[in-house]
Image (cartoon, rainbow, N blue to C red; front, side, top):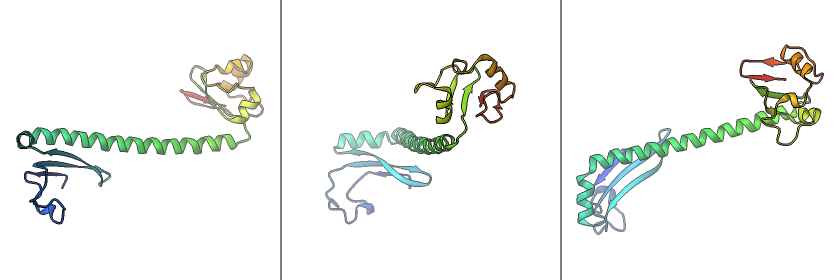
Length: 171
């Protein structure tokens, strides 16, 4: 069950063998399971300890169930996003390791010619500063070399045949 409403805690079958069975200080509970990939990863619990709290809790059960259901979905989505981000960071680290292992200089620019990424070999060849991201590639290569590269000619001997696509150019 994803949702459980206990109107008399301490006397429910779920309370068997609890040290507070029959003498629970709680007067009402609403429990909502938080699931991620069909696995229970937590719960949201609303508890009343007085008769007035119990009356409010049980009197607003449909609205409270909607609310904690949305909260459970938000928590589940946050878990999903965090796991996706962690996976993406691992993939980027692996990608960076492969690119930096190559003995060919690789520079990636955006459509405006601003450097978005370069491997260590390219950094050494072009004498790129440590904070090169966002710097125009033409700051490091002659304009004639850039024109040749963008036309598909291997003007820089350490570069493979340039790969071009509309959003980035890889040298």
